[in-house]
Length: 110
Length: 112
Image 1 (cartoon, helix red, strand yellow):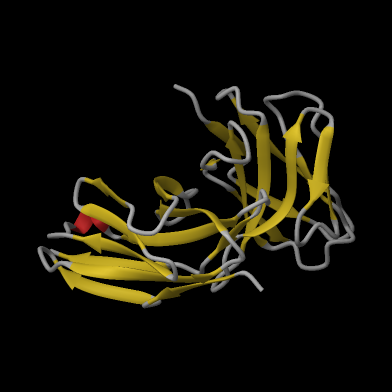
Image 2 (cartoon, each protein chain N blue to C red; image 1 turned 180 degrees about the horizontal axis):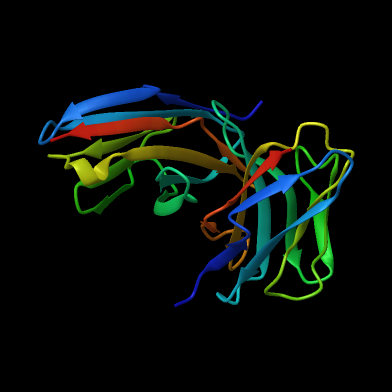
């Protein structure tokens, strides 16, 4: 069964304290892995798509990486405005469906 | 600005009542989706439409109905058969099933 597990469930960082969020997945052939940011009461905002192991994408303080079993979202020198829930989703080959993880709630303290 | 507009932001349903959630996009996307988000759970797919006048059930379609009469519109009706409708409902679209999905800002449905 296709499955996505995100860890940790919640993370508190001091401003400037770098860390990583994990997304582990099992899927019968990966078409794509997606990272989203979701603020309270809002819809998810698309961040990155990764398609194959070894691929990396960067955007400001965020960097996403992909292996055959997991993806990491690295946050370098975070700021309070990076506080949000980060969602990971995978799409299996030959399907239209996304399988979403339950997210990591990130809080960055000033 | 192109985007996805969901309305209303908050909606209240009485017992036995059907309610309709609106989703409009001006991105010229072919594919549209409806998800439900509950605390502690990942987003779950309700319905999906690849093209006008065509749609497919997702994982949790029971108690819901949709229509896709126009490319830009994909309304979701929550019927009285849905016994646990309280949730945050999200509409998304993509240019096709191979492209990333982009989301609206959701409708929060509660029961009176």
